[in-house]
Amino acid sequence: MVDDIDTLVAVTPEAFREERNIDARILHEVTEIDLKGRRLQVRQLDGAKKEWWEPFDQLMIATGALPIKPAVPGADAQGIYGVNTLESGVAVRTVLDQQRPKRGVIVGGGYIGLEMAEALVRRGMEVSLVEQAPQVMNTLDPDMGALVSEALMAVGVQLYREESLQGFEVKNGRVEGVVTDQRTLPADIVILGMGVRPHTALAKRAGIPLGERGAIVVDERQQTEMEGVWAGGDCGQSFHLVSRKPIHIALATVANKQGKVAGINISGGSATFPGVVGTAVSKICAVEVARTGLQEREIERLGWKYVGERIESSTRVEYYPGAGEITVKVLAEKGSGRLLGGQIVGYEGAAKRIDILATALHGGMTVQEMVYLDLSYAPPYSPVWDPVLIAARQVEKLV
Image (cartoon, rainbow, N blue to C red; front, side):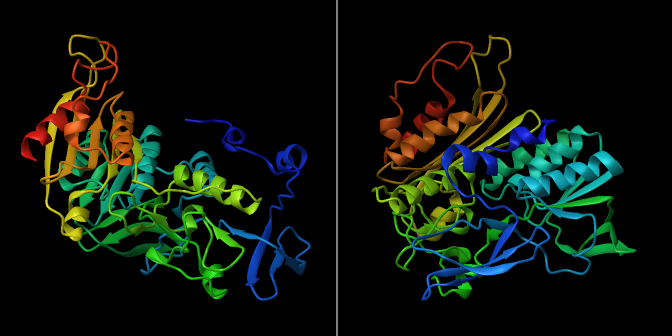
């Protein structure tokens, strides 16, 4: 959708230096953290290949996450890509532009997998997606995930659910097929959409404590258990405001806020990051997908009693041009009515309604309190009763 790669760069190294007085050194790799000596071993990668020890007073670790790479035969072949950085996205775009592959296979139906499936479909490719679970988007409940699966197939994606990856067919070092437990799918290019894991090997070697999914343990100030060492973003652990448990969430919104909090504290100020509710949005062509809070299986794992309801409505008043279908699911605690989570699948104007539910979760609201929220109404934007409030009303009856 974007032709100029430069527009995707938020701040260049030059701007860091000239406008913010920050010495941003690209093509430098930290290979070791020496906490006792308060220093880092740094390797220069741009030809000189110098190595030295760089001292520090305060250390911020923001090493991000790595795409999950399956431990199966052929996984190191050319033509298999994980997409988690601008550079990796550029690598895929370059292959698509220069080699013009015809058949693409996506392995995994998470956010990246779905968005890459859309990107390949838009280029007129023959696209297949392999997902081990019964439905794509396992951050949704199965009934809502089924709507996303239908949306994928509607735009021409061949969807293979409940099939597990066994390996890759490789010829002359290049991928030619994706092997599942049920079939072999020919492939000119393969995209791994199996999620990410915290990139914390460096921190682990330094003895910095790790927690959920191997993410770095931090307090509400983003400080690790080591004095003067901070962490945040995709490599760090978060606190879930609904479950009240630690969680790892690799999302840009979370990383940005955690970085701000850490920076304020490192520079002598005072700030805290309260936690997350797991809000995320995505889309497959015209279909928008959103979720926040806990899903059914997470609530069941906690042993809580809950009620839920799924409703179908329209994004605008039905008589107004451009009104589209929207499905909203709301989950609440049985008895108290405390909102626990919500999911939305629909057309234009659907996904950002998840922010109503996210705000309610941050405020600890019940569905009874939500029903009378003073939300905006005009025919171009919503029915008189917004679909989120319709769902809250239905759940209120079950509490």
